[in-house]
Length: 288
Image 1 (tube, rainbow, N blue to C red):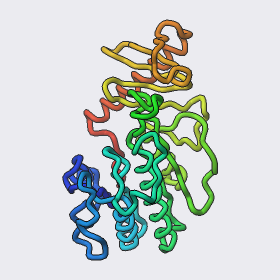
Image 2 (cartoon, rainbow, N blue to C red; image 1 turned 90 degrees about the vertical axis):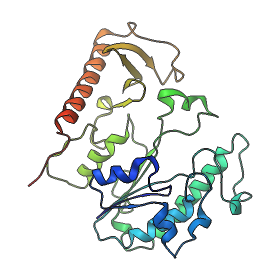
Image 3 (cartoon, one colour; image 1 turned 30 degrees about the vertical axis):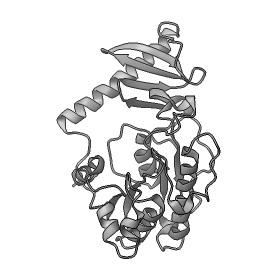
């Protein structure tokens, strides 16, 4: 069984409509939370985005325990977002670090996740579940320059947690991106049928072959220490984003030609493959 959880209004961000198209069985939003007598109803509404993280994560845990196994469920939390508020009962509990009220808010989000795992650990499905924690974008661009802009704004954590302890522990070297999650997990779980993925298995890919791609205002391709941008089907900019995180020195034409051409060819191939598959509806394999 499959489900998607988001504590905002049920039509927020178009998630409800999208998960139906994606084949997810059930959607749980603010409406479902408020209707559940086990929780605090509208008293847990933050007045801006939706239900506070702590109660909604508890609701998430409770609903998981009622889902037929095996299940796949996702939750999109919302408290660590502007205007960076915390529930009234916690305003004097989480101490602000003094730089920005974001920090108090992150302490609350961290506490909410801790409370979720305290509850999840007591459930029969916990030891046989893999947890993946990530973000859609960075939130510190107001206080930390490195997180500002089209590169820094996507510097996010991706955490794989297997309570069995079988996953390698520590920090994975190389470049990892959100679309690496699916092939990494399918391979880790021993999935043996063919599938289509634009990402890679990060547990079995050499560091030198790791890359990332995003497309906000323009396509950006990351490999090694460099990020390449394209406009009008031509290289427009290349930066060493590790040494130059604010992207001030354009290295286009100043790098070895073979490295520059290799990055450009791979970026073009990704775009071409994606566009063709979307146009022909060939992004998945239909198994008998």
